Length: 534
Image (tube, rainbow, N blue to C red; front, side):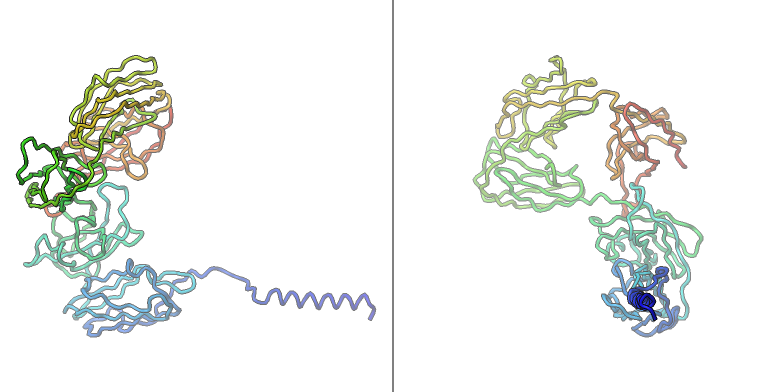
């Protein structure tokens, strides 16, 4: 064999060796596993009747794991003592349910696992697996179906519980605060429709909760609620729509406390309108007080003078169907000083008001110590309105496009409750050209009045709104360029604000309609027809 042929054979052998080595441990791949696990056996069998045991096992053809079980698992009817489900945190070929509750007789129970059961390797879920058994001789098979919507938002939150309470001789409306429902399901993380399954014939109260603390009971402070306007009878073929809303909190006072010299904070839940604060202690001649709303918290601040040399003061707090007495311990603290703030700043809208507010109560304003000049140094006339509870002065004046304004307040223009006064204050802002704004024009079809038409941002915050009482064009002028969502409140009582619902009073929230978003551009108008459904 010549040298050239020997070298060729040697090179070929080395190449084969390296090829095999390179491919060893390098699989060809193939399609990704998207097949969910398969249940091969359950003990007892699914849909078992006359169930007597306290343990259930579900076997799979591969290793599975549990994910988000606390969110996904819905047990109907709810159990007082939650079952123990294993394994958690590890993979296994079977799931064990250990029941610790006393099961009710002649009752169908359903364990809806949602998407919590997944294969261990790829996370493919076994979708919406239900294990059902009955402690009686048959499986209840009736259903109640429908849709969950939000009263204000375009889409409801996820994981909304839908509940049925049996209406029998023991039923009262307050049951939703005290007891868990007869049957329950959940919209989980992607659905707005619901189906309450495996229920028996009867009369029920149908409701939904965005359950803030997952206790299956309504708590006004943390839960959204929805309820059907009347009791329902099962079986029937109706599809129900449940509208979630936040109730206005029932009024409740919190314990007041002194937080600064001659300043007592009276916290509350609910709304402060109608809240009365009465001092029941003896006070010297010349005693005076003011009450203002805190800027940031649900608190009314009670300011008083002169300083009292006492250990405590006695107050009574009242509101509609509410009255309570409190003792406030008095401490020596520094008094708040007057700090004046304003809004807006920079560029302002043509119809935008100018506000000045103080950290201590204002008692007087001298308009002769205030001037407003435009860019030509021309005096601009203004009007003033004082909001005593919010301790805010509102200033309105005519503005023109592409103009600048200087506001000056001389010393002692403002005097507060403790005779503090302002130093010289200077503010400036300007208006833009009309061509930098756009407008929207709405034609209303099949509308019932009155209406509140709102342009909102993506978060639902109101940027512009108008009140419409007649079927005329609705124009939004001088609108800043942006994309806006259109929301319309059907103002049934004509009070020019949205009114939410109340479960105990059986009041549904006012109707809200949503329309497609619009893009407002500079120096450009957007005509739109809003057609309302009956």
